[in-house]
Structure formats: structure tokens, C-alpha cells
Image 1 (cartoon, rainbow, N blue to C red):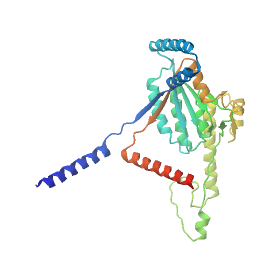
Image 2: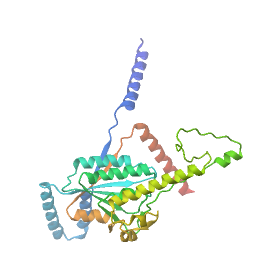
Image 3: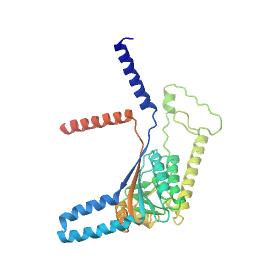
Image 4: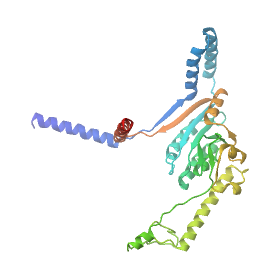
Length: 322
């Protein structure tokens, strides 16, 4: 074999080896751990260095260093802070379950606390039900769970929030909407008008109660509404399990309320923003650690996201010029 052919064969081998490596290597996930209390302390002293006289700053710094020294010899109570920003399919639940698993492995039920900031207007029952079950794991482990609602925790969002030992809400946060909704467009009459036949084959009387294309029969609609009502009863029962003092029949009308009214109705326990609560715990001696699960992305995902980012920047630049 001539030298050029050997070189080409070697290069092809290296390329194939690289493709195999990127395609089949195990992608490890990462956990981002941010000690917020350290950031706050750093910011505080940056500002004080401009505000305080040098003598006062020196004395304050000595006291602070002494406090740090004491912490080194003693396990400080820790507040683990998780964020949940929900969409219709509650896709963040997959990330949340990994974060909870990590916290449960490290937390001390005698000292520590878990704080989850929930922001969601709800979505599919099964996905938010799983989210609520994940939060319930925290309480089952004996840890205190606090949920903060800064903007909205309605429907499925409240289904998750109600699991907490204590619920905080900002004054204008939207809370509640304990109800169930189903919206089903039906194109049967349109198909009929265009003489398009549609056949649906099922085994089991109520395998399909209503569909997008088939004719909606009174019997099928009745069964569908029955299933919807059953889901609502299950929702009410779940909330009542964790909030037994709430008048569930009165409040499970699908209505929502702002934070202050939600407090009067017993849906939340205190009017307070998440930031207020985190700072309060920090001042009480807690370490405040934010936990975020970061799934490892392969090179193709990174490249596609990079291209999207570049295109977005170009678009915004073009729009601003226009």
C-alpha cells in the first residue's frame, strides 16, 4: 500500500473512532451548586467598603471572620433552594426529581429545610400529579418543605404547592384554580360536508369517549364528563389531604385568587416573597444553597442551540435597525 493510501486510511480510522466516541460515550449529568449566602456576603462587604469609615469597616470585618471561623467547626443548618418553572406538560419535573434525589442524599432532617419556588399556571393532570409526588418525597424523608409563590401557582401549580408544610405567596401572586378543564375541537361536521369518511375501531365500550374526528355521541360525552368530574374529585381530595382546614367544596370552583385573599381563604400561610424568606433564613444562620440539575448535552445539541442563539441575535439586531 502506498504512503498516501495509508495516510487516508489512518485519517478515516481516526474520524470513525471520533464519531463512535461522541455517539456512544456515556453522557454524564451535572449538578450546579450555588452557595447564595456566600454571594450575599461578598456583595455586602463590597458595598460596605464604600460606605463605612475604615476603622468601622476593620472592626466589622474582624467580627465577620470570627463568625466564619465558628462555622468551620460546626455543621450549619442549610436551606436547599430549588426552582420549578412549569409548562403545560410539566417538563421541568424530570429535572426536579434529580434535584430532589440529590438533596435527600445530603440533607439532615434535624437541621435542614427545602425551599421550592413554584411558578406554573398548570397543565396535564398526570404530569403535575407526578410533580406533586416528587415534592411529597421531601416530607416523607422528614424534611421541612416550604413553597414560595411569587407569580402564579394555579391548577396543577397549586396541586404541587399544596404538598408543602408551609406556603408563602407574594401579595399579587395568583393562587388556586382548583378545577379541571378539557378542550376538544371536533372536525366531524367538516369531514361530513366534504364527503370524507372517517372510521374509528375500538374494543371496549368506552375505549374512546370523544375524539377530534369522530361523531360525538350523547353517551360518549356523558362518559367523558363523568371522567372529568372524577378527576376533579381526586384533585379536591389531594388538596384536602395536605390542607385539611381549607373549605375545599367552597374553593374548588376553578376560581383563582390573589395572594392576600388566598391567605384569608387558607390556601397559603403567609404573605411573603421568596427573596424575603431566603434572606430571613440567611440572617437566622442558615446556609442558602441553590441546586440545579444540568443534563449533559451532546455536541449536536450544543451546536444547534448555538446556531439558534446567533440567529436570534441577528433577528433582534435587524428588528432594532428596522
